[in-house]
Length: 173
Image (cartoon, one colour):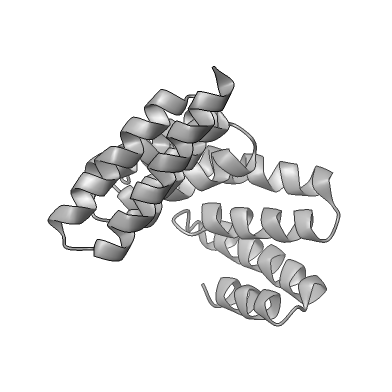
Protein backbone atom coordinates (compact mmCIF):
# COMPACT_ATOMS: atom_id res chain seq x y z
CA UNK A 1 0.00 0.00 0.00
CA UNK A 2 2.87 2.37 0.71
CA UNK A 3 4.13 2.08 -2.87
CA UNK A 4 0.70 2.98 -4.22
CA UNK A 5 0.52 6.03 -1.95
CA UNK A 6 4.03 7.07 -2.96
CA UNK A 7 3.10 6.65 -6.62
CA UNK A 8 0.09 8.91 -6.14
CA UNK A 9 2.28 11.54 -4.47
CA UNK A 10 4.83 11.41 -7.31
CA UNK A 11 2.00 11.71 -9.86
CA UNK A 12 0.54 14.77 -8.11
CA UNK A 13 4.01 16.33 -8.07
CA UNK A 14 4.33 15.79 -11.81
CA UNK A 15 7.12 13.24 -11.35
CA UNK A 16 5.56 10.79 -13.78
CA UNK A 17 8.57 8.54 -14.39
CA UNK A 18 9.06 8.04 -10.65
CA UNK A 19 5.32 7.45 -10.25
CA UNK A 20 5.29 4.77 -12.96
CA UNK A 21 8.26 2.97 -11.38
CA UNK A 22 6.65 3.18 -7.95
CA UNK A 23 3.31 1.78 -9.20
CA UNK A 24 5.22 -1.08 -10.84
CA UNK A 25 6.94 -1.77 -7.51
CA UNK A 26 3.52 -1.70 -5.82
CA UNK A 27 2.22 -4.34 -8.21
CA UNK A 28 5.29 -6.54 -7.67
CA UNK A 29 5.09 -6.21 -3.88
CA UNK A 30 1.37 -7.00 -3.81
CA UNK A 31 1.74 -9.98 -6.13
CA UNK A 32 4.57 -11.40 -4.00
CA UNK A 33 2.45 -10.95 -0.88
CA UNK A 34 -0.59 -12.28 -2.77
CA UNK A 35 -2.65 -9.27 -1.72
CA UNK A 36 -5.29 -8.92 -4.41
CA UNK A 37 -7.48 -6.21 -2.89
CA UNK A 38 -5.44 -3.20 -3.96
CA UNK A 39 -3.82 -4.49 -7.15
CA UNK A 40 -6.70 -3.55 -9.47
CA UNK A 41 -6.51 0.07 -8.36
CA UNK A 42 -2.75 0.13 -8.81
CA UNK A 43 -3.06 -1.23 -12.35
CA UNK A 44 -5.70 1.43 -13.04
CA UNK A 45 -3.52 4.26 -11.67
CA UNK A 46 -0.56 2.99 -13.68
CA UNK A 47 -2.70 2.81 -16.84
CA UNK A 48 -3.78 6.44 -16.46
CA UNK A 49 -0.21 7.55 -15.98
CA UNK A 50 1.11 5.53 -18.92
CA UNK A 51 -1.60 7.03 -21.13
CA UNK A 52 -0.62 10.49 -19.94
CA UNK A 53 3.05 9.98 -20.84
CA UNK A 54 2.23 8.71 -24.33
CA UNK A 55 2.42 4.95 -23.85
CA UNK A 56 -1.03 3.83 -25.04
CA UNK A 57 -0.11 0.17 -25.63
CA UNK A 58 1.22 -0.27 -22.09
CA UNK A 59 -1.72 1.72 -20.70
CA UNK A 60 -4.21 -0.54 -22.47
CA UNK A 61 -2.48 -3.61 -21.05
CA UNK A 62 -2.63 -2.25 -17.49
CA UNK A 63 -6.25 -1.20 -17.94
CA UNK A 64 -7.11 -4.73 -19.08
CA UNK A 65 -5.48 -6.15 -15.95
CA UNK A 66 -7.38 -3.70 -13.75
CA UNK A 67 -10.70 -4.59 -15.37
CA UNK A 68 -10.06 -8.32 -14.98
CA UNK A 69 -9.13 -7.92 -11.31
CA UNK A 70 -12.14 -5.72 -10.56
CA UNK A 71 -14.37 -8.28 -12.30
CA UNK A 72 -12.80 -11.05 -10.22
CA UNK A 73 -13.35 -9.09 -7.01
CA UNK A 74 -16.97 -8.36 -7.87
CA UNK A 75 -17.59 -12.06 -8.48
CA UNK A 76 -16.28 -12.73 -4.98
CA UNK A 77 -16.08 -10.87 -1.72
CA UNK A 78 -16.71 -7.41 -3.21
CA UNK A 79 -20.03 -8.30 -4.84
CA UNK A 80 -21.89 -5.73 -2.74
CA UNK A 81 -19.31 -2.96 -2.81
CA UNK A 82 -20.48 0.25 -4.48
CA UNK A 83 -16.90 1.52 -4.31
CA UNK A 84 -15.55 -1.44 -6.32
CA UNK A 85 -18.43 -1.22 -8.82
CA UNK A 86 -17.59 2.47 -9.29
CA UNK A 87 -13.90 1.78 -9.82
CA UNK A 88 -14.78 -1.03 -12.23
CA UNK A 89 -17.04 1.38 -14.11
CA UNK A 90 -14.25 3.97 -14.21
CA UNK A 91 -11.86 1.42 -15.72
CA UNK A 92 -14.43 0.27 -18.27
CA UNK A 93 -15.22 3.87 -19.24
CA UNK A 94 -11.52 4.65 -19.58
CA UNK A 95 -11.25 1.69 -21.96
CA UNK A 96 -14.17 3.06 -24.00
CA UNK A 97 -16.65 0.38 -22.93
CA UNK A 98 -19.42 2.75 -21.88
CA UNK A 99 -22.14 0.10 -22.07
CA UNK A 100 -20.61 -2.10 -19.38
CA UNK A 101 -19.47 1.02 -17.50
CA UNK A 102 -23.06 2.25 -17.28
CA UNK A 103 -24.12 -1.16 -15.93
CA UNK A 104 -21.39 -1.00 -13.27
CA UNK A 105 -22.35 2.56 -12.29
CA UNK A 106 -26.04 1.56 -12.15
CA UNK A 107 -25.16 -1.27 -9.77
CA UNK A 108 -23.10 1.13 -7.62
CA UNK A 109 -26.03 3.57 -7.50
CA UNK A 110 -28.41 0.75 -6.56
CA UNK A 111 -26.11 -0.29 -3.71
CA UNK A 112 -25.58 3.27 -2.44
CA UNK A 113 -27.74 5.98 -4.03
CA UNK A 114 -26.33 8.81 -1.90
CA UNK A 115 -23.13 9.50 -3.89
CA UNK A 116 -23.70 12.26 -6.49
CA UNK A 117 -20.50 11.57 -8.43
CA UNK A 118 -21.59 8.01 -9.18
CA UNK A 119 -24.96 9.22 -10.43
CA UNK A 120 -23.10 11.67 -12.67
CA UNK A 121 -20.86 8.91 -14.04
CA UNK A 122 -23.95 6.84 -14.82
CA UNK A 123 -25.64 9.71 -16.64
CA UNK A 124 -22.48 10.57 -18.59
CA UNK A 125 -21.82 6.97 -19.60
CA UNK A 126 -25.38 6.72 -20.93
CA UNK A 127 -24.96 10.02 -22.77
CA UNK A 128 -21.70 8.85 -24.38
CA UNK A 129 -23.58 5.83 -25.73
CA UNK A 130 -26.22 8.09 -27.24
CA UNK A 131 -28.85 6.62 -24.91
CA UNK A 132 -30.26 10.05 -24.17
CA UNK A 133 -33.66 8.90 -22.89
CA UNK A 134 -31.94 6.67 -20.33
CA UNK A 135 -29.50 9.46 -19.45
CA UNK A 136 -32.38 11.89 -18.92
CA UNK A 137 -34.19 9.36 -16.71
CA UNK A 138 -31.03 8.67 -14.69
CA UNK A 139 -30.40 12.40 -14.26
CA UNK A 140 -33.97 12.98 -13.08
CA UNK A 141 -33.67 10.06 -10.68
CA UNK A 142 -30.42 11.48 -9.30
CA UNK A 143 -32.14 14.82 -8.79
CA UNK A 144 -34.95 13.17 -6.84
CA UNK A 145 -32.57 11.19 -4.64
CA UNK A 146 -30.34 14.19 -3.94
CA UNK A 147 -33.34 16.33 -3.05
CA UNK A 148 -34.29 13.78 -0.37
CA UNK A 149 -30.86 14.34 1.17
CA UNK A 150 -31.18 18.13 0.95
CA UNK A 151 -28.23 18.47 -1.43
CA UNK A 152 -29.60 21.56 -3.16
CA UNK A 153 -26.45 22.45 -5.13
CA UNK A 154 -26.26 18.93 -6.52
CA UNK A 155 -29.98 18.98 -7.33
CA UNK A 156 -29.43 22.18 -9.32
CA UNK A 157 -26.48 20.63 -11.20
CA UNK A 158 -28.57 17.63 -12.20
CA UNK A 159 -31.44 19.92 -13.22
CA UNK A 160 -29.09 21.82 -15.54
CA UNK A 161 -27.65 18.59 -16.90
CA UNK A 162 -31.14 17.18 -17.50
CA UNK A 163 -32.09 20.36 -19.37
CA UNK A 164 -28.92 20.06 -21.46
CA UNK A 165 -29.69 16.41 -22.30
CA UNK A 166 -33.24 17.28 -23.30
CA UNK A 167 -31.87 20.05 -25.53
CA UNK A 168 -29.28 17.69 -27.02
CA UNK A 169 -31.98 15.10 -27.70
CA UNK A 170 -34.13 17.71 -29.47
CA UNK A 171 -31.21 18.52 -31.78
CA UNK A 172 -30.76 14.88 -32.79
CA UNK A 173 -34.35 14.33 -33.81
